Image 1: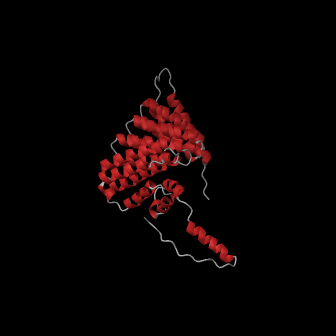
Image 2: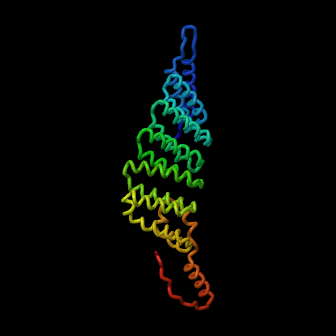
Image 3: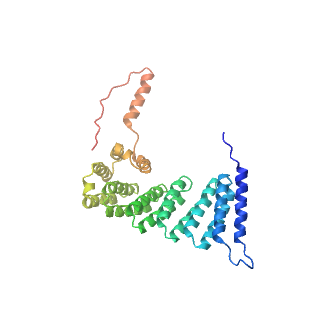
Length: 312
């Protein structure tokens, strides 16, 4: 068991704060505050408070430190201080306020010309906030994606737009999800990332089917076959086509049978959840369960030939 002398660290932090305040004072012989020295002392105090697990004091001082850095014109380091304030606020379980501080840090990075740092921050924070507040996660993913797009980092932008789309899908907003996935398709096309385009096109088709617009789904499929040879030659293309055929026939049992294909059960979990709405109860399994019940009751079940499993 180790022993950390937190009281000593707290005392050290308080001493640094007092020294920092002295550097900020002005007098008849000292007209301007010594910002550099005050910032250095407050930064040391923040470290001591963090080690001593005095998160509230560390947060408050980090915010004050950020303001001094803004006065000095050091927007990047001000962003770092807001990040630290956000992290301390997370420790205090105040997640909405933490999100605001993270966003402020991102804005400061952008203002200081550090778009890359801002995009990385937004992506990291979006992942953290997914389980707490999907709206915040979506906002951060989109902000990160736009910044990556501005920096001509199409691969990163496509990835973040797709992550935002998956979060929006969970809210049931199919039109917005479709819009973002179209953006992803365009970005991936410029990168010639056809391996990823195939999957995104599948998602776009499924969204049309979820929205009960099989005609639009068929149009996306046909355009993809014409415009992307890799899609037309894709092994899973046939699974998509026969699913569309089932929707064209408006045959619920056939749709259910084709949705049971292993491929459709191994894609993005939210799509799997939605696809399962089309899957009808398996009559064969129900019959087997009923036969088992009858057998256990002492009555010999009648025997039937297995029906042919029509995959087409």
